[in-house]
Every structure is written in structure tokens, then in C-alpha cells.
Length: 278
Ligand code: AMP
Image (cartoon, rainbow, N blue to C red; front, side, top):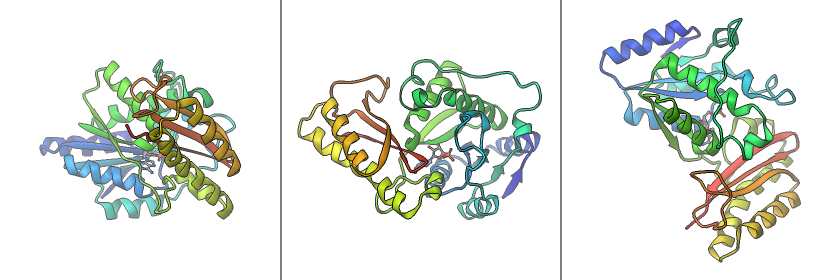
């Protein structure tokens, strides 16, 4: 496995692999890897012969009061996990490699970025789209892999790829959970044992919502009941929304809809989602 911090270095390796007729995959991450990230690598290996994984805690997607400076980092551990998973190259640039002096461009996707995390984290998706487009231009992969854990991010990136005629295929992979249901996240490392227990209410509330939908409850009723359940479990709710998964617009029919949650366990902001059973 190679480790590159320069754009030219990773570009050369990807070009060489392409010249050897290999299909190239990119798995963009912010590091502090867990099984969710590794599932993207495994997905990538199924359809591509060369897998690049980027590790970059992208400053431009964090708000001023968010956790950029304390975001968990452990490069040695990440490198070991990548080596064990059979990643071909880690691209781990410094911020100045990605945003040199004078950098002045931002990519903005309208519409899909308006609700959910886009409403709570102004500018977040501009930061995400800009860095993802840069990574795609640097590596030129045939296929890039993203988790459905960040459902809105996946939808926004698919939109960007379509609107800007990117040659890269964008593939979503299912959410990987801890055995007790908690969606895996690098931010779970922040949780105290009590907060982790409270955080379980996120995935549990999605299952309760699914049961309510199956019994014919309406969106408003499910959203309200979910918000109360989370509050009872000491989660400070950011949003509880049932939306059309294609448009991220409100829908009146919960069956087959996207149920998306964000809330704080202590100071840690967590998200989760589920497509409610039809
Ligand atoms: P992050 O490092 O949190 O920016 O995540 C990098 C990629 O891994 C994104 O495409 C995420 O959606 C994906 N990811 C993070 N957590 C999970 C998970 N629990 N299951 C599946 N994919 C995940």
C-alpha cells in the first residue's frame, strides 16, 4: 500500500493503474476509520481493481462553532486498517495542498441542500461538494463510494455529478451499525458511556417509526412521537423529518419515505436515517 500526501503523487499512481487497465475507485473519508468506511472499501474492491482512500478532515465543511479542531484523528491506526483491508493507496493531503493561497472557488448545489443538515449547518454542503469535486478531479476514479449513513450528502453528490457531467459513477452503500443498532460514526468516540446509551434511541426511534408507519400513522404523528421519544432519552433534537427520498421534499405518505434524524447526545451531533417500509 502506498501513502501519498501530494496531488501529483496520487494522480500518478491512479494513472499507472488505469494504464494497466484497472478500474479505479475512490473512497473519500475524514479518517478515524471504522467498519462503515471499510464496507465502502469492500464495495469498491468488488467492482474496481485499484482502490484509493482519501483521508482529509476538510475544514471548509465545518461551521465556526463545530468540532473541526477536535475531530478525532489517528493516522497510524487508519493506515493499519487500510493495509489490512487491501487499499492500494491512501491519499492524505495537508490542508494547504487542497486549499493553496488564493483558492477562491466553491461548488453549490441548490434544492437538495436546503433541508436537514443543509438547514442546520449553513455552508456545509458547499464545503463537501467542493472538496469531493476536487478529489474526483485529482484521482479521476471510474467509481466513487459514499455511505447512506449520510443520505443527504449522497443525494447531493449524485446531483452534482449529474449536473456537472462527471464521468465518475457515484455509488451508495448501506449503513453499517454496531450490534446494538448504533450507526457507526467517527464521532461516536466522543460519547461518554451514558451518552452512548442515550444515542441508541436514534436507531431505536427509527424502528418505532417504521412500526407506526406500518400501522398507518401519518407523517406528522410519527415525527412528533419520534421527537418526544428522543427528548425522553436526553437527545437534543436538531431535526426529525420524513421526506421523499428522491427530492428531500416533505411527503404525506410515510411508507417508503426517508426518515432522517439529527440530534445531540451531550455535545456530540449524531445523524441516522432509514427508508420506512412500504
Ligand atoms: P466520514 O469519514 O464520516 O466523512 O465518512 C466517509 C464516508 O463513509 C462517507 O461516505 C460516509 O457516509 C461513510 N460512512 C460513515 N459512517 C458510515 C456507516 N456507519 N455506514 C456506512 N457508511 C458510512
